[in-house]
Amino acid sequence: MGGELEESLVELRQTFKSGRTRSASWRKNQLRALIKLIHDKEDNIFEALFQDLGKHPVESYRDEVGFIEKSATNALNCLEKWMAPTKSRLPLGFFPSKGEVISEPLGVVLVFGSWNFPITLGLDPVIGAIAAGNTVMLKASELTPKCASFLAETIPLYMDSNAIKVIVGGVDVGKQLLQQKWDKIFFTGSPRVGRMVMSAAAQHLTPVTLELGGKCPTIVDTLSSPSDIKTMVKRLISGKWGTCSGQACVGVDYILVEEKFAPTMIDLLKKTLKKLYGDSPIDSKYLCRIINKNHFERLHRLLEDPLVAASIIHGGSLDKEKLIIEPIILLNPPLDAEIMTEEIFGPLLPIITLNHIQESIEFINSRPKPLTIYAFTKDETFMRQIVSETSSGNVVFNDTFVHFVCDVLPFGGVGQSGFGRYHGMYSFEAFSHEKAIMQRSFIIDPDARYPPWNDFKLKF
Ligand code: NAD
Image (spheres, rainbow, N blue to C red):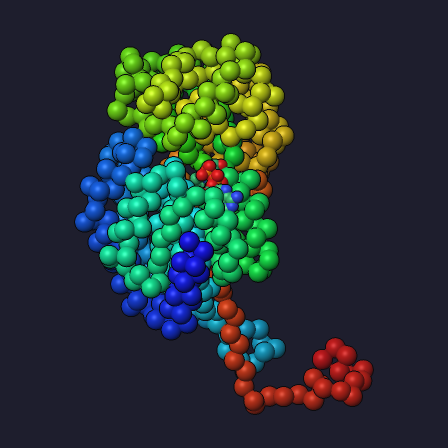
């Protein structure tokens, strides 16, 4: 494997050196090829996602196939604009001079995909990398083998295989990749491995983008309109169980709600869950599987703490054979239990009640900075307070998850949820170096620039 990997890397470097990936036409051809791949192979992608995760085609289209198609089309349509140099008006003191900023590709880049959205989280950074004119190695996650082999087998059939390579493998392959020198590493995964990526990158001063995880808190203010409450509950369910069964970095992790409003919200949550997933959710076609036995057992262990188990107020069935966990709601589990200190990444939803919703700010601020804070509220003052008094990668009011699929907003974490940003134009920027160019004229060259110094030259 080592030799093969090094050979691939040499090939990527030679291709970059040849200069062909810099042209707009190469970039556009690759984006067109990717769009064609997605169109031609839609059914194969649905099948691979179903086999790896039990993902329903509607969810697969929304979060993966449709997402990538839209992202590649957007990059194709905006490419000329993104690539165009930006003229800078230089201050009078520089006259006569010209200034501009150009976007330069970084070179050979490494992308770590993730298993929860194996197509999207692999290919979306790749779109940014090729739009910016780089060559790229994508490490597909070993935990979704069908999707990983699909990417490894299909991409070379459509795209420039000397410039875009997919490698399949686990931790060992990850370690080998990190021993190499890259011009950029884009990593999606856990903060634990993120630290290793950053430390390996430091050896070569390689820039990194870290898309990490964490607990996304969801503040639910007391709402009065029954129709708003209904919409809020459906959106909560969608952001918890409707996105890969809660195995999502932007999934709702836990809810903060006022004690007096909790019973209304919980009652409707239970009724709506029943409506959407039926009387026996464990048999529902609309819930994804837990990715593997280890993660299933990890989630099971979170519930084994007797005080946590005692806080379950809805659901509780787990199917070890099928790796399905039905929606489980917990009311006020102990705050020092693992379910409240670690990212859940699964279909368990703790609800924490507060005397006053303002306490949610202190609650969030006393924990690591989240990737996303969700807040359902109509109170504009409270909205401003959440934005200005907390720190998170993103804030979404009155919905869940939708910001991830909106490519005009930057997406990325802060603090323990990572750093750097991508999506749309921000992906292009993530894989580019903004190079400042200044062109001077020979015409004006005052003596004041040169010694011997005197009082007149001091403030010239
Ligand atoms: P992980 O960190 O365990 O693995 C990520 C990748 O790193 C995999 O390809 C794996 O093979 C590789 N890897 C693991 N150990 C390694 C090592 N020692 N050296 C080199 N490579 C190694 O993450 P995961 O469990 O697969 O994914 C879940 C995490 O990812 C969660 O924390 C989640 O929140 C986060 N995530 C973040 C985003 C985002 O966009 N911010 C999206 C999806 C998932």
